[in-house]
Image (cartoon, rainbow, N blue to C red; front, side):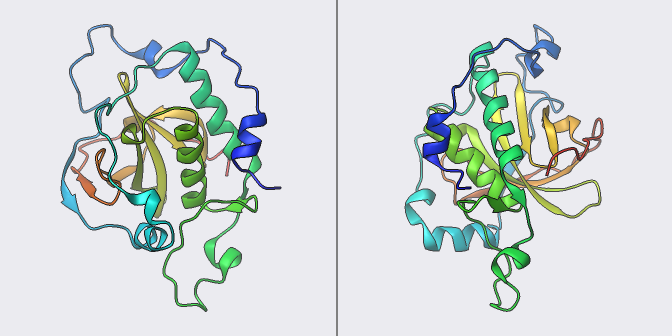
Length: 217
């Protein structure tokens, strides 16, 4: 099955009021706190997978309009976010890059692309989710690819969605959308809102909250 723009367009995006991270936030939480917003700082190294992706698809890697760097959460766009996250998690078959593309024999260290054949690893899930959200009208400047260490302290890619209620994480290893500080991951770096080919280091975390369940791959 090809999970593409056509498939997304065929999905009826139902606007359902459901519990979101906004409901857990204090009404006076306008200040960017450590708990809600990951502290990205100085430029750092660019992941090799992104560099190779940009070589293949340079138009996807151009600087963007960063007028909007956070999205105001509403019941409607929260429902849309949940639906797109679920759509990718349920319909993509998890497979390693080596099993999928034979990257080791080809001497390719990491391969990021869109899972057009319905298969992929964490990188491919993230690329698809960002693509579908952009097509649904979300600003690229609020959708940031993010490198983390997972619960086994292995490299993993997730999508940070910057909202007025905090940095929300879309993750193929968890069906739930959580704030960054609730995932139990160590956050390393993420894209700059204004230029997806500039990556910013995330300051070392003094603590993490909660444990994400690996319910969906």
